[in-house]
Image 1 (cartoon, one colour):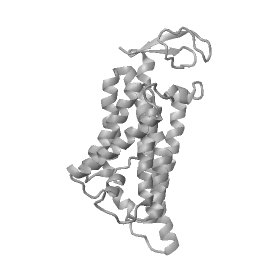
Image 2 (cartoon, rainbow, N blue to C red; image 1 turned 90 degrees about the horizontal axis):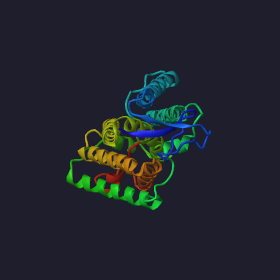
Image 3 (cartoon, rainbow, N blue to C red; image 1 turned 45 degrees about the horizontal axis):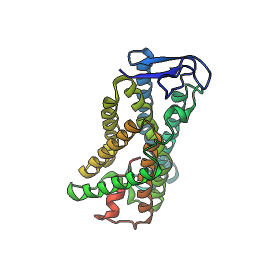
Image 4 (cartoon, rainbow, N blue to C red; image 1 turned 30 degrees about the vertical axis):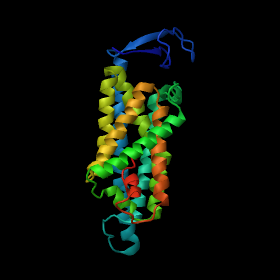
Length: 290
């Protein structure tokens, strides 16, 4: 049974299992076990945030596509074809950025208890004494090399994401903004922050690792459908990031590794010529998770 020390008044989590007073509000502390109602409600809130995130992505992208078609019909007098093109791609990517903003705002309300707890400290925003920034860079590069190996040994069909990349440089810019500017933070806060922490407290770290690994990978499968290599790579990345969260006890190492992983691919993406296929460049950019 997992035991977490929290403040009775503000819910601030304590690292010291034998602490008797909250350093934030000086209240007495009490252990919170997995059988407590507050523990179970934490899992419910975490999955609620996940559902809102997924629904917001789908609904906002759909709304964006409909508005694009309506606007196109209004200005041209003809219904534009509903096919993937640069304007439609930019609209849907912009909708994804808005969905990330909504999700991050909801995460703040849940994590802080509407402002009663510190956001970053509660999430675990610090390094582990055995895992620093240099380790995040090394691990991210190792995962990228592993992705290249998978491209060589497993089938790799053309994915929807690669079709998106072929639409032009402006689309690539939007993808880079998402992949570097918001995705590593929003996704890690939702999956390795809220969901992992809630399940770990209620069911233990092994269950948390299993559920979060599969949940993160499953959400990305449609993006890379048709490429077993990309799907296995995403599943592997999800497992590594979740294990990193489990063994460091902190979220910052996961965010940093995810950020470096996406950033390297973003540089390759912007520097590579359009239309490149069956190359190391394509192998890198074909499974950028966001």
